[in-house]
Image (cartoon, rainbow, N blue to C red):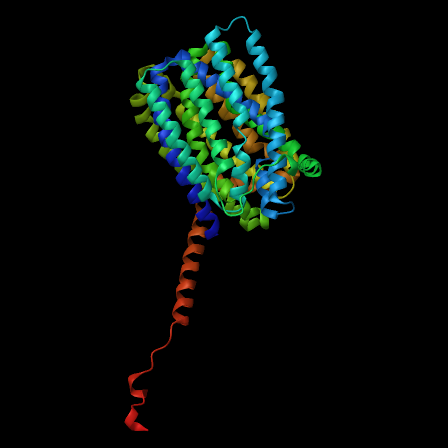
Amino acid sequence: MKRYIKNSVWLLLEKITKLAVAFVLIGLVANQLGPQDFGVLSLGLSVATIIWAIGNLGLDQILIKEFTQQKYPDSQLLSTTVICRLAASALVAIPCLIAIYLAPALSPEHKLAYAITIGSVLFYNFNSYQALYQAKSQSSHIAVIGLSSLCISSLVKIVLLWNEAGLILFCLSAAFDIAMNLLLYSLYPTKGAVRVRLSAFNVSIMRELWRPAAPMLLCSLMIVVYTRVDQLMIASLLGVAQAGVYSVTIRVVEAYAVIPMLVGTAFFPYICTKPDAEKVRTYFDIVVFSSVATGLTVWAAAHLAIPLLFGAEYMQALEILGISMLAAVFSVVGFACTNYLVAVDLGHLRPLRLGLGLLMNIGLNLMLIPRFGLWGAATATLISQIFASWIGNALSAKTFECLKLQSWSVLTLGLPGVNRVVRELLGERVSRTKRSNALQPQSVPSSHVIEPGDA
């Protein structure tokens, strides 16, 4: 247990620092660009995220499991994954770029902005390296690389802000951030470093990974569409400026969700080795507790940060922040459920529930956005997330056990599991202290010491 906690601490250290700095810079960028241009930047990145959900091939959690179990050589597994993901991303991105070029309603500046942000998806492959380090509980490498990339990208954004740069340069900056991550991961010096080589590509590994990955690909795509469809529909129904305001809420929610999801990822190997009921219950409790605790903290901080950093034009985002944060809590609960289903080889059951939830979300958006605006979009997401991430597990007898474990964790806020972990850690500390005392040489009482003259 201590190993997994140490692993999560490194991940959290890197992500919290990165998110705090990035949030400040994004606020200043949004303030400088205004809702219209910031909406274009955010929409382009949203489309890139949807493309990556396809190019990702649903392999994130499966990769961690495979690297942990070590059925294949690391070099072959990593190389096969990176090459497949790059090819899949390119196949999806190229038609999108052609469609943007042919779109008559877009200005040349907006066409170029969308092309840059969508093209950046080709550099998203650094996730493959992250899976390797997480499986080996070497998250310190992720922290070092992430913080190094943060320093470089922050300096670039500060220079652009200082010179009052426009939309195109900030789009290039966003693409540069992603490319820098990939470059640092591929060149990072580690003991026994694993490098991507075309010669290490293994077709049999690709086929073996595809079986469990196919349903997870569908899941990850639907999850990403969940978080992006509101923004796209708002842009279509209410305009790009309103989408820019809504994207501020999305930024806050994404910043929040990363932390409990990282906790869930760091503890995922804990249930991969032996997914018994006690371990799974503890896993759900830890994820739920971290999501609630982090959510309350971020919600309070956002009420101070948004007016200060983003400005008066984005104050409407605060009206829907509470609903969106609650929806994100259930999204994290669904993320933990997906990890559990992967661990017990039931990942193929997740897409049906997600598909129904996505259809529910789109239908509610069509009804609520024209009438209630941004509030309607946030409410639609909340209702559909509750179904897709939690209640929908009642649809199958095989996932009903997961529903019970989730319900217990949600109703207790994860406190029992956190209490068990704390007691376990304290017990380990007491045991180490006792062993240390037992190994120390015992002093001989003074009455039994033999003086030289006594012989």
